[in-house]
Length: 343
Length: 271
Image 1: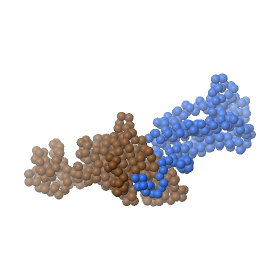
Image 2: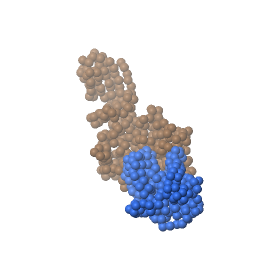
Image 3: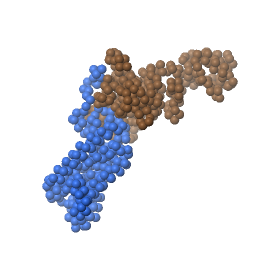
Image 4: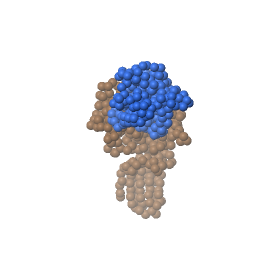
């Protein structure tokens, strides 16, 4: 393993920002993180995707020196997280799932204090705070106490606080959970801009579309283990880019309809007999035309046809063989419906 | 590999330790944060303003006649006693607030910053000396209004005040330790009261020791609170520096030497 991630390769490709081997964290009987390996290239956005309780936050907290690891090892830009934590802290910025800013102080006061802690002088700290507030569109709210801030403003301030020292690696733990779609898009733009300035971003998310929008590579994590790793395209290919849902008018035709679907699309389909519904992964949208013609030729009438992007649940089902647990299912899945067409 | 990292560090020197100077600077910044918080929520100063006024009035008029024959004779005894009792018990709040503060997300950021580990704790404790100073000042002012004119003069009274504030700061490390290891803020309050009540009342703060049974006198005489009260009385009432001042300062130093490292270690383990 060591040879494979040796210096030569690392230097050539800009190096590894994060190399984690077999990370383990147990809380009582619960192995929250159970042997996680992560390799993040410097200058990229890396997404860690998984449902609540999968071990995403615990993994990030261990990498960010906030939590002691029970097993494994991790290096940040080559520095050992356990042996050289104070160096690692000089290379990272952390934006937690719950805003890690001071509620009782104003936005300016927060940023000034963090700047001073990072060694900036009094005047320099003020200037840096003003500059960051301007950049994150918080200038008007600068003097207000944080209690009056909206969730989005708080997140932006939190991110601003992580950028004071311009750290080369930034951890973002669920940066958009609980934000409205517009604020979410703003956050995405900010994250993209960060990477353009040379930073590396490791973010966790419950949303496939967020990982899709931002990440160069994704690790899917479930029950403390990495169950899949690859580029967004590789990951999607394993479930199909989109899913085709068909509802047959006469349920007696369902067997014949499935045969035609599988023949034309050359994939495996699944059916639920009661509702007369057929679901099949679809690589090319163009094939739908062929399929509709074939179905009409066979005299099968459709009640409904829709094409949907795979939800996190379906990605999970495909990769792990079990779905996201009912009460842990993220609310955004509904918003993943890409297009719905009726015939 | 390390050359890559150094480059990424944007020219900052990377080192895996914090210098003493940096620890002091970080602690002062954290103290500044504590002061800002007090300014934002002045209602948390209620206890240090009301308690000295109420306790001084109550104890003096209730016990004055019975213990010293008259209120004016009791004042030189009770004011130093009540001062130590009030200010020391104020330091419990430090532990309670630290516990509440640590629950908040901002402590995660403090932990992830390359700052001295002791700074968030030392800063919070340092900011609270403002609370002790308010309580000290108000106790002396109340005493003065009721007719307490210490013979030591303003200079020695000020020294006595500083001594009490310094010792309370030292004692607050004990409660900070409880604050770090306890699960909830109210349990910090509970444990701290159990420790503090016997310490402040089983002392010479309110009554002359020679009226107590022999076995109790033994405890009262070794109680560090008694030494502190005696030191304050000597300073304020006669302007003399006795061995009790040295004992108080040594005691304070020992408390800090034991509890500061314990607290920082517990703080770093707790995540």
